[in-house]
Image 1: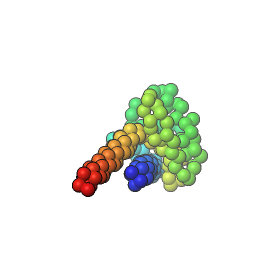
Image 2: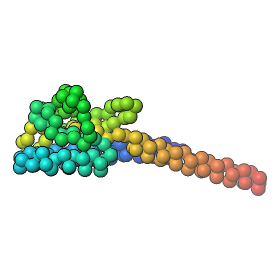
Image 3: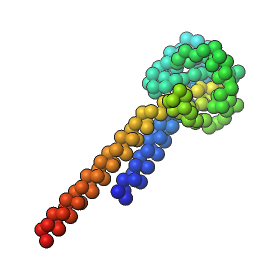
Image 4: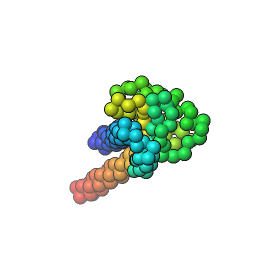
Length: 171
């Protein structure tokens, strides 16, 4: 038991850090690709396909906006109202200001918790990438490990009790 609780906390923190790191890496990758396609004038043709591919791979949603916050590409349909309000989202605002760090936020939308990452476009291009990933899978993996640790602890306690009874009965 003394090892199980710290092990569970270390594992859950590691899983969360891995998801945040993967989301950051993905946002930076899409932002670099978006900047290159904008520089070469192929954003209208190549960017929507890349954004859709990225969203399918991570199981989330990806939005790319220009320097004014206008929608360039999205992995999912957005209403006109949501498209207009993109430039007011905190992560996108920070990325449009050219924040060098990636902004990571967690929010609950419709009962589902999401990890949100916004990154500025690279190569001197004005714009931002906003990526959201549901955290359900991470929570499920962490709960699964906690359950395995609890069952392992219960198994060890059961074995100790049986050995104790065996020794008591033998002596």
